[in-house]
Image (cartoon, rainbow, N blue to C red; front, top):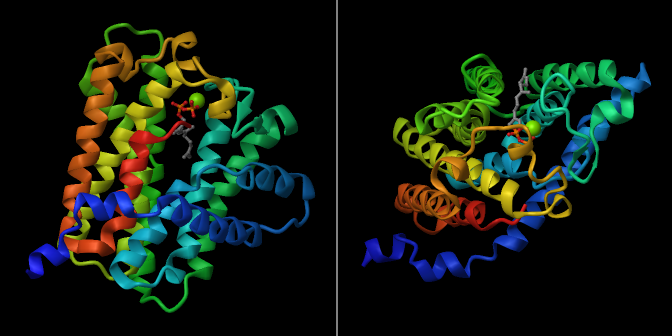
Length: 308
Ligand code: FPP
Ligand code: MG
């Protein structure tokens, strides 16, 4: 009886109004981001940082952090500075990823890339500024939380950014460009670092701030690793199947820059099936939390159904 009550049935998951949930959280995040970074002197750099930070987007990373805090402590407010920091880090990684020395892209989130508006020099510095500010923002604005949890969060963020996370994943990604013999293992390793590490950090930070147990952290890490990989598989599929307008960035870029992708390795249908399997496993990981896990489970489902 109790067990039935705790386990979300498929009906309750499909009944969950994710659209409204995401919209509500996105509005909270947009407001917090807008307030997090005001224009100071030299104005040019603050404007460049705000240009990309406030360019919209799904805000999936901060929402994952808030939803995890809500799941474990029913208190998302404690996680808002970290949620903003995660979006600052994500944004800076995109600014740098779009630079001519990397992917050389002209459009991001439906508008011109940072270097196209402010020039390469300022775009590099805007990325650096956002990265440093992310850590400052967590350290100075996280309130009513034991200091050791905040220190742990800062460590998780640093690890996700560094050579075993985004930076290392990007290096491997660039190394594989133009190569036709990239294996599924290498591709998965790239994406675990380049995309998965930060997505996992979103969930882990929300959990640590909420005083998660080791069991909570293990389950949530598996959930995050699965959705991270599924997210990237779908990203690769959308690069082939969606339009530039739908994506808000240049479609077909993986083929033109000869990137290793899952559709290239497995075909679109098998890639889609693998993403669905990963998401189903992620959903199952959280079934122990009952209905409280519905937002995170619905977000996992959304990752395979999204169109941009
Ligand atoms: C987009 O990938 C890029 C990333 C997910 C991260 C790239 C990481 C860096 C540039 C390192 C940043 C530096 C620090 C210090 C963190 P994609 O090119 O596959 O996707 P896209 O089509 O959206 O561009
Ligand atoms: Mg890119």
